[in-house]
Structures are given as C-alpha cells and as structure tokens.
Image (tube, rainbow, N blue to C red; front, side, top):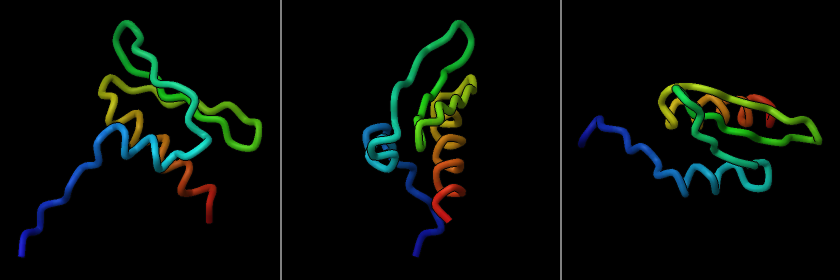
Amino acid sequence: MSDASRIPREDQLRDLFRGTFRSLIRLEDSFLVELEISGEALRFEHPDPSEAYGRALLELVSRSR
C-alpha cells in the first residue's frame, strides 16, 4: 500500500467550494482566491495557486464545524 497522497485538480477544488467560490485572480507576483461565505468576502493570496486554494479550503472547513 502506498503512502502517497493525491492532490485534487483545480476543478475538483472548486467543486469543494460549492457556491462560495467567486474567483481566482492572477496578480503580479501571486494568486488570489476569493470566496464569499454568508455575505462575507474572503481573500486568500499566495505565490502558488494551489496554496491559495488550500488556505481558502482550510477556512471553509474550519467554518463548517
């Protein structure tokens, strides 16, 4: 059995966000993921788009508890 983890594709990540996902924007030196949760706009910025998505997903998960 392998210990390797599978990293989801971008479209799979967007599916996890459901209706909260607003946009992925490429900035000069980073990427910005925008979500909206209960009317609150949230922004997650990082040079690596997968990290920006990951930070957004962690926030979404932490709010769902």
